[in-house]
Image (cartoon, rainbow, N blue to C red):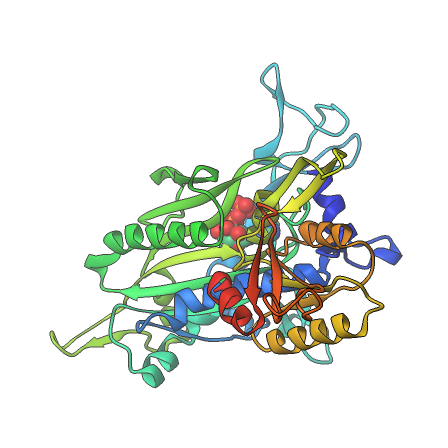
Length: 444
Ligand code: ATP
């Protein structure tokens, strides 16, 4: 994990938020490469979950909502972790994560047994809307994106004219005042979620839960997480939320252990029911066949952008010893991202930076590819060094413009370039006019 954190900082995937002021615990900034990685992940989720389907539409809700949303959803009263305080070192600790010694709960920080009784600690960040900071102005930064979908259910049903089963998808920020932000970005206080609420008839809920579990596993495999690194944990009924008729956690083998990436939960009609009761506005569905009104049930696959990005980086990280033509060995650090997720798809290199023809040709290739994919032009240093720098950024392809390209060694290889593959380090010769298609089909 230390190596991954160091690489993320060195190469500009992830920085500590407000770093020059000492940071802020649980908050992170994504640098140029991290931002591209997250964007590729979110775009692919959107493509799979919305654009490639007839039965899902998107929405983009506000982060602050009427406080009554959080009262009705149960978050104001119950979105809590039971906490204890250590009277000795004053640490605040999650009651369900305390180590025990001889049957007694112990403070993991100082070892004291002098702990308070567990108390509820609300995980929502409170804020005030408007000029006065009184009770009537209170609301919360949303701790999940899902509630905006539930409260807009009727509007979206009407405008989209969808029939059950259908879903509403959303990607956006969520905030939780986690007690113990840890494991790098895994548990943060500000993070992004990708959530789908898939509404259905009550009789189809259980079957759709299984369907969405399989769909989501397919998604993770398609972004390059191996089946062996993914685990499905079926939550025992007694540990499920009281309204849930079944929940799966999709877990990933992080360097710090097997941990949740996504929850796939069958939430029944709980949320729509709660909001219908609290708002007094109908949130039901009219079934034209049976001429009946009822509240749809919902299956929710809820994934974390940041956790998945961290999983992608962890899975991609590799070190290998390579030996060059002169017999010299060195360790190569390489991020083996699936090309679809890689922040930069292609590096473009003129063999020499002081040869005008090479540089001009390389620049033309950059211009040609730029509309299609993220490319990176690099002319400084030995070509081997430039390849290594892109290996560390996870760039799957390197294109080198050399003297053959500009026809200096005869016409046979004129207007062709070397394409170097990151994982195998093998090289092949491709015509410039075929480059966009060659790369395009490999990164989609
Ligand atoms: P955990 O048990 O790890 O706290 P959770 O079960 O509370 O997670 P959900 O409420 O199911 O999480 O949220 C759905 C998804 O949102 C999670 O699977 C995770 O990917 C993401 N997520 C939740 N909390 C955080 C967090 N503090 N930091 C980063 N991502 C998070």
